[in-house]
Image 1 (tube, one colour):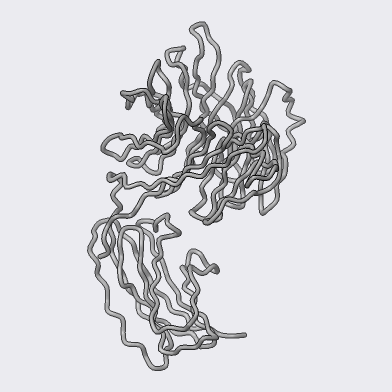
Image 2 (image 1 turned 180 degrees about the vertical axis):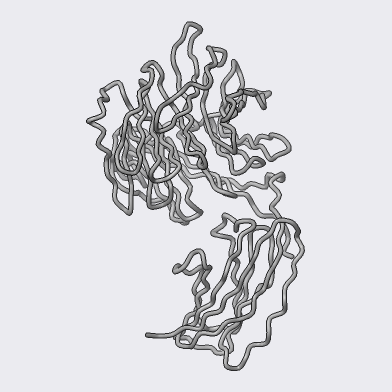
Length: 448
């Protein structure tokens, strides 16, 4: 078996300062073939340089990060003396307060190790709103429109957008999932429901739940429809959304008070009033408690109710009594449930304390704007996506205030949003075309 030279480099990323302290690497020992060093740091990125004392076109050199083993970050031919490489976690940024070990491997040599080098880097500035927007449109060439309902972002090279696609790349075909591989959008899977997939929730890229009215589970590369026939649901029940805290604690909610829970072995039904039609669900990953909102018709008109759900039951923690016209989104952040509600001509953003159930309005949008979905990266980086009468809009909270960013499409039907740090994706449709908007935060800090 071929052996390999392996070098390790520990990089500790701290957000307390932008300064850089490093020990100069030793000169390469004649017996050593490559050396690895840091030549620059900036918020969420590290620039590495490896130097080779021998050129061999038949060899390749790979750089690895310990948390991604055995997959290399990059592989190069051993055809130049020096090569640089930037690790920014595929555009998502490296984590803060996390240690990373880097290894450079070249074929055909024994293992040797370099010294440790430590750098200090600062926290990114979320107040600048230095976003770039990329738009993809998927027009239908059939009488049936293309539309997308929801999206899940794993990383820059793995995004699932779900809905109903009736034609793709000028060819008639029907399927429910578009997959982004970092370069192009491609079909994934087949047709699960002609009316589309309404919601997606994922624990990771190997465990994904799709809501089609029923529930489809994707696990280890296989799609399977969940059989709930023995739980007593009828044609009035249709599932709309799912959320989970782990693979053994998953909830789904839907019309006519439909609630189910998965405990890792089996699904069980949780009974609730059948006049409530659930539209969204979120939860607290630490406590494992879910929070769902639904709509019902009361004496004052259309009402919103917010519920707290555990494996043992469900309780109502807020009822707006018809004061608000419509609740469109819900998410959990720290110990609060965030909801957005349309009130006459613009939206309010309110929170519900998960312990006391106290409700507080934290922001009123001063111009006409309907929030349809939202995602929180942190308490200082929250994205609300919606529209006014003319265009789609991003409404961003940066820890200091709120501001708008217009989308370059007119009059869209805005649907689901999901994201990770520095990468937000929204989906929807306009006329007969599905659309996907990718919002990236451009890192603007200089190298230190």
